[in-house]
Image 1 (tube, rainbow, N blue to C red):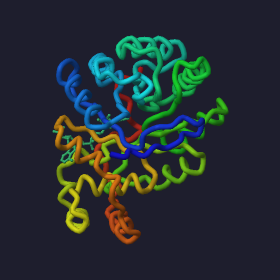
Image 2: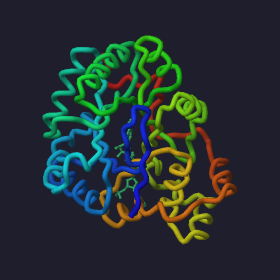
Image 3: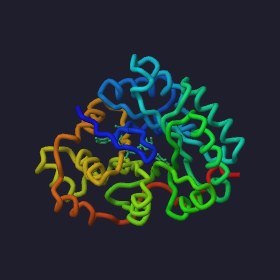
Image 4: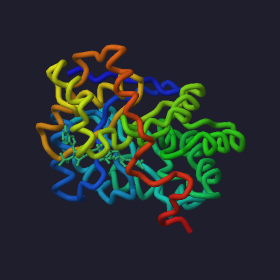
Length: 277
Ligand code: NDP
């Protein structure tokens, strides 16, 4: 199954569709899920220090028989680890957990209030030392990104934010596109549930002989947004990656766009202070 790639601003190639691992417990569960995902064809695995499953993710990649270079591995720096020196230390911890010697994409998990520029300076060092192939952020809105650039001269290569038909942050999307910052949607299915029952989406799904989840993922991908759906079920892993063999029409794309209610499940990036000192 074809999994298209996107080229980040520094030339690094990244699969457009990856496998999310939030809330999959460490140990056998995450090892099984990541193993199945790799077998099904996923080549991008998204984890985070905060998910407390980096060890299992690393084990599954090691056991997969794939070359390390065949997997695109993302992890994230947690809120309690902001600051220059702490970031460098936290990065070493993640590398050790993941049992690898480099990370493909290292992301700041949340901006917090006032330490993210120091953190970003450490990210730039890790990048310049070749210990990460690309650096980026999550949950950064335009103003946060502008601050990073004004103070360091280095734009993130990617911004991972909550995006789905009910929450479409047009301003941030346009800002990122203008500066060649790739966008990646977290909770691209809004954790499934009610969004899979929206009539517009269900009808479009029927007309393409696809599922509502496939329509949503296709809608995001067709706008150039990378997606990282999570599931522990093999059938859904196959379903979610099987979205490269059809196209939504311009009017279908537009119809889904009208569903935006600026309603997400995540915290507000400006006020999310969990674990910040
Ligand atoms: P998703 O939108 O990926 O939805 C996951 C939920 O949907 C699970 O409950 C899963 O259930 C269910 N599901 C998945 N596929 C299908 C399907 N085809 N049909 C029906 N139900 C389905 O939510 P996540 O919050 O997990 O987001 C994806 C990833 O994004 C995370 O795992 C994580 O890697 C990342 N993330 C990043 C954040 C950040 O701040 N940077 C914040 C949140 C997430 P089941 O497993 O039972 O199949």
